[in-house]
Length: 137
Image (cartoon, rainbow, N blue to C red; front, top):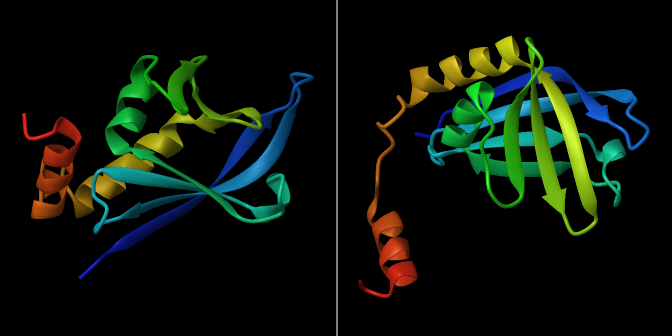
C-alpha cells in the first residue's frame, strides 16, 4: 500500500528584479518513491500553463537545509536565519524559491514517520538499474 503525504505551503519566487512573488507549493512525499520528494507548482507559474512538478532526493533537501548542497538541476541552501532557498535549473532558465525552514523541517519529519531515513527499501529494480549504469562493474 502506497502512502502519500501532501503539505501545501506558502513560498516566495524570487523574480529577476529581486522581488518576491508569493506562490503556494505543494510538498509531496510518496512511500512507493521513498528516496524522493516532489515539489508541485501551480499551473499559473509555469511557462506552458501546466502544473509543474520537480522531483529530487529527499536527502538533498535534508542536507541543503543546513549547508549548501546539490549538483545538477536542483540546489538547496540556507538563506538567512529562517529561510531555505531551492534553486531549480532548466534550459529555459533558473528559478529560486524561498521556503520557511521550519516548514521544510516539519515536512521532512512527517515523511520520516512513513519511511525512516536510511530505511528506504532497495528493491531489485534499483539494483538492476545500478548494475546497468555501472556496466556490471
